[in-house]
Image (cartoon, rainbow, N blue to C red; front, side, top):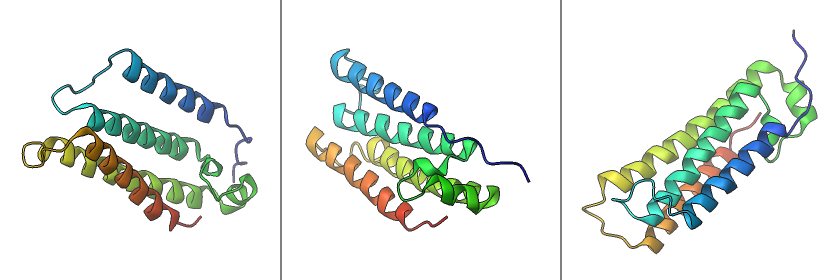
Length: 139
């Protein structure tokens, strides 16, 4: 059995800095990634993709203590298989949320002519639903 890696939040901080930088570029640099779908949907896509990347990093590093409700000591005791399973479930839930939002953005763009406010509310709702769903996953 290999020892659990030393507690570190360095990658998590790097992820946070990159997220803030990308959002600031989006807001102030005119970084419209998909101009055909509108600003609200663009920002939702950016946030959801960054959340997917976060959970992929958690899966790769087994740093499940980055997720609220899990301490480093609990993660260490759980074992590698439990940590991987826990992180994988979180990643899958957020990937499904991203896929659903992408369907809303690209698949329903002609059917649902929504304004930016509604797009942002849908993105927030999708994130909230994913958070609630993932909160039921136990280590």
